[in-house]
Every structure is written in C-alpha cells, then in structure tokens.
Amino acid sequence: MNVSHPRRRVVFWVLVMLSLAAAVSGFQWIKRAQAVPVKAEASAVPVQMTQVSLQDLPIWISAIGNVQALNSVNVRVRVDGELQKVLFNEGQTVTAGSLLAVIDPRVYQAQVAQAQALVSKDQAQLANLRVNLDRASKLAAAKAGPTQDVDTFRAQLAAQQATVQADQAALDTARLQLEFTQVKAPLTGRTGQRLLDVGSIVHGAEATGLVTITQMNPISVAFAVSQDDLAQILEENAKGALQVVAMTRDGRQEIARGQLSFIDSQVTAASGQIQLKAQFDNGAAKLWPGQLVSARLLVQTRRAVAVVPSDAVQLGRQGNFVYVVDADQHVQPRLVDAATVVDGKQWIRQGLKAGETVVVQGQSRIAPGLKVTPVKTDTAADLVEAAQ
Image (cartoon, rainbow, N blue to C red; front, side, top):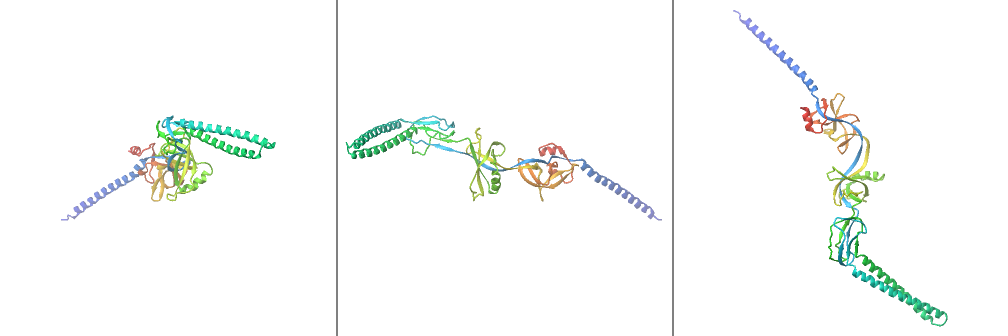
C-alpha cells in the first residue's frame, strides 16, 4: 500500500500556510514602516522661533569700576585754641565758604589790636621824620643849617619806612590768624564724621582734622581695560568723548551716564591694563565714593547688523550654528560667524540674512529635516508642555 501521497499533500499544505503567513506578516510590516514617516511628518516639534533682524548694535567694554570723588579735603584747624562752636551736622551738604566751626578768637583779637597800635605808633614817628627832613632841607638850602642833618634825617626816614612796612606785615599776619579762628568749608560737598568736639583744645600742628568734606557732584568712576582695547578707544575718543554707563555690580540696573574724561599715560606692565576715568553728573547722589559699580564703555555702534537672540546660537563640532526654518517649516543647521553678545542679542557677521527664521528655544528636541511649529513661550518647561 502506498502512503507517500497523503504525506506529500500534508507537507504541501503546510508550506502553503507558512507562505501565506509570511506574506501577511510582511505586508503588515511594510504598512507599519510606511506609517512611521507619515506620523513623524504630522507631529511637528513645537519650538520658539524668531526672525533675523537688522539693528544698530552698541559695542561695549565692561569692567569693574570704583567711584571716586573729584576732590576730598581733610579740614584741619590752622591756629591753637579752644573749639568754641561746631556749626555743621555729620553727613550734611555744605557749600564752599560756609562757616563750619569757631575757635576762641580773643587772643588773636588782642594780637591784631597790638599790631595795629604798633603800626600807628611807627607811622606817627615816620610822619615826624618827614617834617624834620623837610625842615633840615630848607635850612641847608638857606645856608642856615648843616647838610649833615639832612643826610641823617633821610637815613632815619628810610629806616622808619621799613619799620612801618614790617609792622604792617605783622598786622596782616595777626589778622590772618584771627581769620583762621573761623573754620570754613574749602569746597562744596558732603561732610563726614566729626572728629573734634566743642571744648577741645586744638592745635594748628595736629594732623587730625575737624572733618572730611567730599565733593559729590560731579563725580568720577575709575576702571581698567585691557591694553588690547586701547587702540580702538583712542581712535573713537578722538572723534568725541566716549559714553560710559555706570551699572549696579550685577550689571542689571543703570545708575548714571557720563563721559570718558581720563586715559592714563601708561599701561600697567604687570596686568596689561590701562586706567581710565569717567565723569558723571551726580546731582541725584546715586553714585557714592568708594562704591563698586560695573562700568560700560561704549566704544562703537555697529549700524544695521544681523542680530538674533543669543539663545539661538549653538556650539557644535564645526563651530557656532543656528537652526534655520525654511518656508515648509523644516529645520536645517547652518554655520554662522557669531560676534559680540550685547544684552542678550547676538551679532551675526556672516551666515544669516534679515528676515530668515531661526529657532531660539527647543533645539535639543529637533534634528535636521524635522518639521517644527512655532509657539509663543519663554521657557523650556513651556516647550515640553506644548510638545505633550
């Protein structure tokens, strides 16, 4: 009995079933593979984007600055005596010439009176010698008196004139000493801590002063920049005084605007820096001597340059690049020549044109060729939420 035929039929149908199963499975795999790009194409990645704009971009040099008074004077007494009056308050603004304190003037008033009396006495003697000389001259001319008397009176007159001049100088000195008993402000400014009390015996030779007066307006800020910037600073400053902005130390808030007023005559060899000063109108007293600020020197303004937010620029293996969005909302990376960053704005020297669209946030979630969709957001967290 031949049983090979039924076995062949079984094997045949098994092979047919396996072929059909493979065909169905392959069809489904192809269908799924074809569906993947469709799904990716439909799911655009949300990103924040902006257009490249042409702007005037200020070029700043920043440095830590120290606020300095243009003038600061330690007011010292010039004569000895008892401090009778103090006529100012600590921290008060005083004007030049205003009376600050009074030293007991009685001794100096007496010295002035004494010197004045001596001047009067010697002037009287001088007048008498003039009369005697005139009389002796007339007698000698009339042959009624010796000419020797004329010579004697002339010599005495000259000596007395010198004495009167010395007396007058002594009187001027006494008056000056009396004037020094009134201590006056040498400049307009703000008083510091009072160092002498009423009733103190003061001496003109003492180094300790009565008070320090600091000029508050105008005021200066001293800062140092690299010698590498010196050539550009000199070139631009020759066209007109450069603008300097004093900011808070963290650079977030503007305090005052002034002008560059001083460039040192030499570079500090040890640091390779050069000292600069800027002068500010400080009528509002926003700048304080000794205060640390961030000084920003405006050396140049670039006109109509391509600018993007600094967050748009990424660093890759080949250098700086940005993701550019085409008309179909697909992104492609593009190398750019990125220059200065000013207040969050990146100057692009080459690689972008005005009006082109670039990705600002969300770069970590995209790849070349992907489709993106714009969202109005400022944080990465918002981008993640928009993508979900």
